[in-house]
Amino acid sequence: MTPTFVFTNAAVLTMDPNGPRATAVAVDGDRITAVGTDAEIAALAGPETRKIDAQGRTLLPGFVESHVHLFMGGYNETVIRADRVSGMEELRAAVSDYAAGHPDLALLLGQGASYQILGPDRSLDRHVLDEICPDRPLALMAYDFHTAWANNAALKAAGLLEGRELPRGNEVVMGADGKATGELHEKLAMLPVLDVRNVGGRESHGMSGIEPPVPPTAKERQEDRETLKVGLRHAARHGITTMHNMDGNRYMLEVLREVEEEGNLISRVKVPFHLTAEMDISELDRASAMTRDFTGDTLSCNFVKIFLDGVIASGTAAMIEPYANRPGHRGDMLFTREDFIAAATEIDKRGMQIAIHAIGDAAVRLALDGYEAAANANGPRDRRHRIEHVEMLQPDDLGRFAELGVVASMQPPHAPVREDDTTVGIGPDRAGMAYAWRTIADTGAMVAFSSDWPIVPISPLAGIQAAMTRKNWAEGLRDQRLELQDVLAAYTRNGAYVGYAEDLTGMIRPGMKADLALLSGDIEKAQADQIGALEVDLTLFDGQVTYER
Image (cartoon, rainbow, N blue to C red; front, side):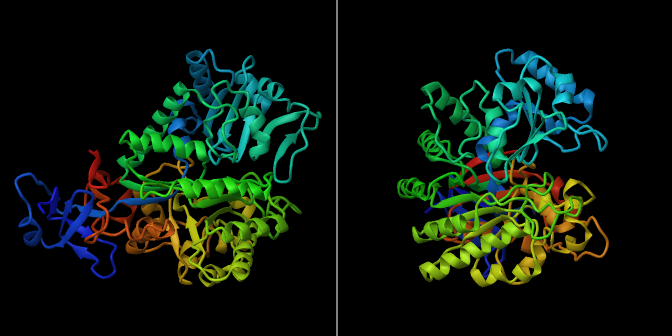
């Protein structure tokens, strides 16, 4: 058949170990039909073929974004962009402008705030936010979504000003005056403030593990479709053709199916069921139903997301030894050991994949223990369970990833390159096992890379640069940088494997789906510290152009 696309004069990095390089690729419909030399592939073209002379630019498999929050990424464009401001006056101006433009909002919400947004010597609290906005509820979310700060009006509206007892791992921080300081740690402390919103509460789609309490109206569903399409287009602009979403519920899957029926689902998307510590294990029946009902090559479920802990910067990550800057403090696990192992065993028994948020080394150890217990209880099968982030790791647990077949799903842009709120919690004695992706990869374990967008920008090219140029924040630590081919594999072939899609995408070879990314230059000729400056010129998903610069 005559190809629909022919790429020639390209630096093709196929990510196929059996044929790693070529100069030309042919595409017919949604499939790659031929990979070879310019002469071989050019001869296949017909009058209707779109012929693309790559002029030496790199052609790659479409990037696999293995850890992303698609809806929040799109929604993030509609709130106060706290990630773009620094200092009291810039923050005051951003809040004032947003408040003037949104007079009907019950809660003014900002996202992306640095823990040191006001500088190293001044912390956010309700008093600071009252200075900025004394008369309307205001809350700012930290860039990692594990801490929020609320003003007096927001705390009153949420019923938190006098504090509240919450399950382990969640905290309304109290001050010496017996009132809440405004600092809120983890989901159950933040949700009462977020519930003050009068826009439906759908913005965090699935993060709480529940369905919308009130069925969204037709107008709200349309708004949600548009938000998801904003996120999908943004991902396509960066060469992404597959996404593993890390929050979700049935409603999100249904809305994405509506987007797909419109012809606008321009990426493969996996959406999990989110199991929380408050749920009875029988809630997994909903996960099984989601898995049964969404099985397509483009839209699927078949995995469960679990949070075991928080983050190091706020002291909510679960550590084996105390935090270096907080004597005696180890953080709290969100699940008891018994409950988590029971949940992991049951999910595994149902044949679903598990993705566990585990940042502290105690949480990583418990995740590995749960996977080992599940394997012992349920017998051999192709599991591909994952641990998300793995920011701290005890040396005794290093070899268990490869032994248990567990994937380390990590985010190179997260690794600190200078001292900050995270590194002071880790301390120098255990810094060598922090963000240790090369150390893990050297054991033979599978490593997949991603961004965690909107925590950091979604760009895989920026992530590739971060993985190749990482500088340690302290002297004498092991070099965790990886070579280009290994990093590219972590953003393509490995991600496809983690998503059980290695027969569809992640490599350029005949018969695979035509998921491709054409870069603005030759990535192998670029200096490592300039890779992030490259751009994506063309993205193909299922053989259709989803982005062209």
